[in-house]
Image (cartoon, rainbow, N blue to C red; front, side):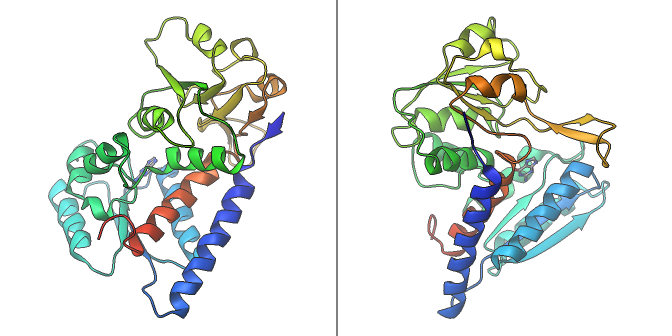
Length: 293
Ligand code: GUN
């Protein structure tokens, strides 16, 4: 069994991005600028956004954090999105989700200029991804592809079982794994909360990508010997063993499953650290106008 070390790979990618930013600076080019809009004070969102801003600093990007209280109106938020769309200094921006119930997330996403949508959530980016055109691919699926690539994991002709059908992970992951490309060229099965006999599908999988948000759902008796396991789960399970009072728990019962695998991602330190560097990679592409002019 080989551990897929997302922490180490993400550190390496950060160095690669930093080196490129240095070159851009040296040749008098524009430093990539990522802006983030954060609404309210949700613990998870605060942590993620702080981490995104910190990573911008690490790689040498400019970053801006725009904060609103929970009672911000949809109109005010949309006005800010339009302002960022029109601000030539901002190369890419994100609106951290979830948003308060009185604001339509879809409306916000569709108001973002797809050329600055470094989250890859805009329907134009989602559509272009599904037909294999250059686009911003959302961070978690892009991070998983990068891990498969950097570990030279064969995906062609393999049976990839995806657990979960979210717009952020399950659906794009299925689309990318079936793409005529590497990583890709897999036979894909998507299982979700209404799937009967999930175990039977998992037992046929060469690759399992678990993105259900159901702690320790995947057990040893569901996994074929030699399978590759990518664990996207990050549920905060209460714990009296940690200072924060919770333990980040994956969708895979790691101790039990790991001995059967050829490769497995740990939680934390697997997929998680890759998502932020994927966002940085998209911001670099946006800064270079490498995808859209
Ligand atoms: N909330 C959870 N994941 C994400 C993400 O990748 N981007 C944004 N904007 N919000 C999120």
